[in-house]
Image: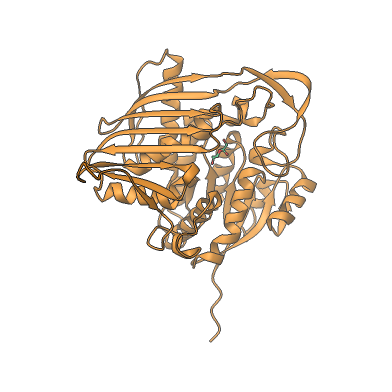
Length: 412
Ligand code: SOE
């Protein structure tokens, strides 16, 4: 008997640089590896420049191209808008899309300010009664080893949460000759290391412990206040908005001449904080840690043990069981590459491991399943708003000589 065709989920994506490439890969692979209730269709790629968008669409597998996202919102065959542009455009596009009855996936951090994030939450709440869903792309939540970490913590395997330490270390700005890009422009990016990578460890602390932040003390610093002005380059959206990235969607760009311009965001963010239980947290986000390429690390110490993760070994989770006899106690290195681990069974035979891109595919899988079941996928816009409140409190604290600053708690 012929199989009945699945209902379609028409997708339009805005922006086609680094994040646009990862998302395209995810939309392409999700239903090829996972049994999804809806079939995603890569309908339209939106970019500001027609020829560049056309080239990207043909490489990444989008059927059509548009230079006008508002027109795309009018299309009946488009059901979901995937926003991969710099933060300054997120609120406007997400609000309009939700009000037009489209589901939304938006890259992190969800906005450049609390006020924008709040507007997005309001729009998501209006849309929810119509069965429309919104999700923020904190993709690391869907790394199998980190999903396992959350399972172990919620099963009580490390006991009560006592303390969290997390770092997100990169080095792509350590060289002062790396040119300016949109990520160094406060107008476009909202903040620097804080929002770009610090947002991930704020979200992961929240995801793993299930606790919100209560207060913080923050120290932000701009280590290289001026940089060469970048030569115009290809790409569009998330990594091309200020002409920063080539077609490959990398982070840096070419230098245009001798002219220099100001860096208007933080280069490094250092934070101490407390969770709602009172548990202390220490966070560090920097793009100046030579030799650290994408070292997103998190260690949670509980009353009965600990878990520890480093993205540079993304298939590994370390677990310490404090009840083990001292003679043989030590961190157990768990390879999260087995069919028993979240998402892994859909991919390769045991032990073969996953990469950066898989988190994005898993994100699409959970989003599509949530939409089909009419069950709000997480991280929701409310979750994203909490992260935004934490970033805001860190900035205010840093501006007030690191003064302890309460994190505003909005309703869930
Ligand atoms: C750049 O610093 C960046 O691409 C972040 O923007 C991403 O969110 C992170 O996954 C990797 O680093």
